[in-house]
Image (cartoon, rainbow, N blue to C red; front, top):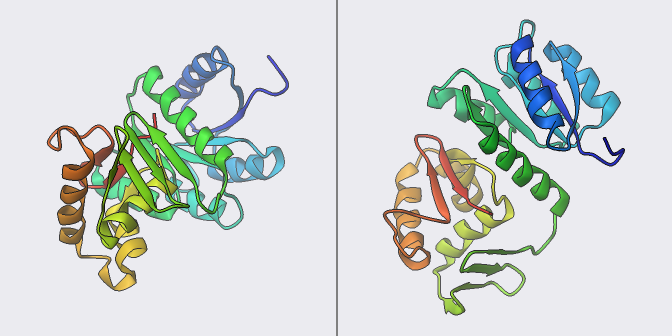
Length: 230
């Protein structure tokens, strides 16, 4: 394997899952480091500087949410949670703690690889001040504050544009309702989910060919929204 292969840290106490990930990811050009506990995972993250972390929530020593919080105290490495917990509140809690994405076990290798590519691409882009996104017919230039669909400029209200801009800056990442409300309307609006529903519906009518079957502005049921970036 190439020395330049992206390094992925797997933090999971289940041997069968680590073996599955080792075979699946190694065969697709990734280098794996493994840890069985949260404490080991935090230590490995500090020592090895992986490009991405795959994290289980049900670890024997620390809950995955706690591991995420501790990693986020010093690291911006993308974290994708892999967990058998499928409850919406579990997803919301770990995403609010700083995880970038969440997959519920069991999952397909193809979907995992796609999520990894998106997370690595987003991390490689870096914290650009004025990013530009092009996906399908949608193009957004945050520097010029312009949005196009199929080459035609789309005029958005200030709130619609602010909501889209937040999604563009985190393209490919699941953003919870609370995160979006805080970014767009401020901390006092963190429970006003109906704001999001209204403005997301308006955005979809302006940007989606079929608003009822959105291609770009994807709903994560009960959790939040994701701007699809591939």
